[in-house]
Amino acid sequence: MNLTRAIFLSMVVGAALGLLAPGFALHLAPLTNVFLRLVQSIIAPLILAGLVSGIAGAGGGKAMGRIGLKSLVLFQGVTLIVLLLAMGAGNLFRPGDGLHVRAAQAVVETPKLTWQSILEQAVPASVVDAMAQGQMLQLVVFAALFGAACLAIGERAAPVVRFFGAINDIMFRYTHYVMYAAPLGIGAAMATTMARGGWGVFTNFGRLIAAEYSALAALLVFVYLPAMLAARIPVGRFAGAIREPFAIAFATTASGAALPVAMEKMEEFGVPRATLNLVMPLGFCFNAAGTALHIFLSCLFLAQAVDVKLDMATQWTMLAVLMVMTKGVAAVPRTSLVVIIGTLTAWGIPLDALPVLLGVDAVLDMFRTSVNLIGNCLAPALIARSEGVRFER
Image (cartoon, rainbow, N blue to C red; front, side, top):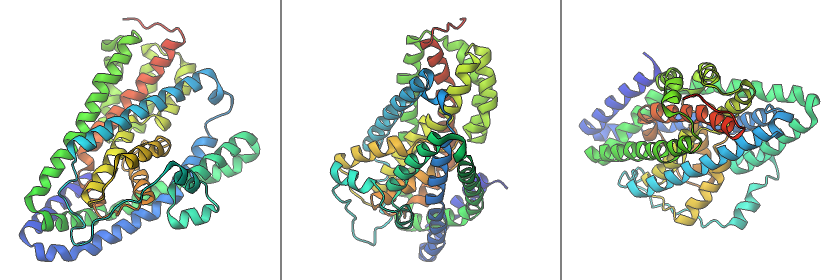
């Protein structure tokens, strides 16, 4: 039985247990807490190793060239749009309202953050201290500067870059092991949630799915499609070209698994190989639009679920931080969890509802991964058009 099926089965069993034996279900909370502690142990080393190896391995001249600069500007623009869509969907649908995952405790209020305090707190005095205290923003700043320094000195930093690359690979394997505990942790979370909230919990799941799917559909219809029409990219041919990699991404929920096929198909579509070899790998690292949308919407959902009040100033600050933290999220399932936990920790938001989110993650993952794939196939086509390439209709 694969992990997705095991999680789905644990959700069903946990929900039934929570409805039929709520008194017993409430005693399963320690299983969820153990799972959360295991997940939290992944975050700091994975963010540090992933960002350092990703930035240092970006390449020198190519990354600083005209096409690379255009790509990064495009990726940041798309990220800003999808985060705005996530903010709108989260405040419109409010999928976490009424869950009261921490109903037995006092309502938590987020601290009032200012740009001055964010700026001061973003700079680490000690990277070890930042890792120990879970200061993810400080860790991101350190990793970005360290990776840039490795990139600047070139070959002499190669052993260090390989070391962090190996740490990154090890942490993915570590994550794989931790996820074996997911069915127990998620099943227990579902049981306790249902014991407290009853049938009304399903309304929250429906609102969360509707919010994310609506925002992703808006991205496709109101951003990607107009961009293709404005750039005179033949929509029919493009759809035919990405059909096979789209199916791979949808089935595996890992857009990285579709990268080789996507590159081959986009070259056949007419994107020059030089452009493709730079833009598409950068896109799979820095242009995960569907994942960025999911991360911000999930943060809003989890805050609502634990009765944390996020005012608009805090949400805008969170959006600005996620403009950076959503870069370099690996194109494999469940790695967005790293950024979600890092963001919640930075704002002092309890993680009690996180396993509930993971319970419906498989339903959300297929569509957002497919949207990632579409964006990363469209980006090299748009850059090629800006360089004067014309595509046959």
